[in-house]
Length: 182
Image 1 (cartoon, rainbow, N blue to C red):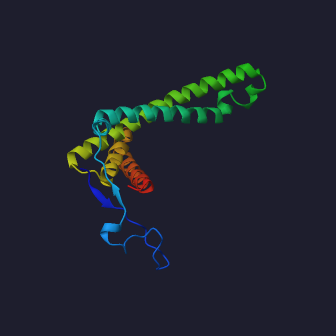
Image 2: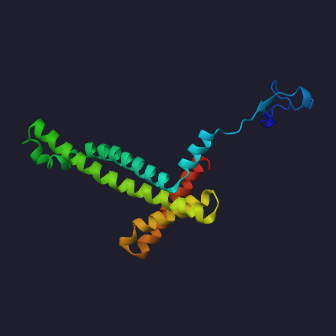
């Protein structure tokens, strides 16, 4: 049989009992909410989504989609470069200008998609490895993964760039975790 627990009510700020407050009632008259055990499908779905490979691939796919959207946004904002500068703009037809802007936007989208996919996969993979190594699920995992991701992405800039990348990605990860309420 499933467990049964008391439904907690928020305390009243005025000091009076609210109409839904049941703490004054004896246990036999209180309303209870039935808790149900998760189904086999729910357990399988949770196990699947907690798999490191699945999380890494999913982060790469979602990161590339976000990169495409960001590339489209940035490509459409950069009309001067796409049209060859202001002087050439007056010599181009509307079709030529649109074609150049579309090429520029496509190139930016591909570039951002690759970068965001790599960043997402690197972060998710390192977070999952750190979580499995530490055997804990807490906010420190994302901070450590952010540090590792920032350092790896900045490795070509040398040790100073790696330290800055580590600190900035770790701070960003902590900020996002705090914003999301974790």
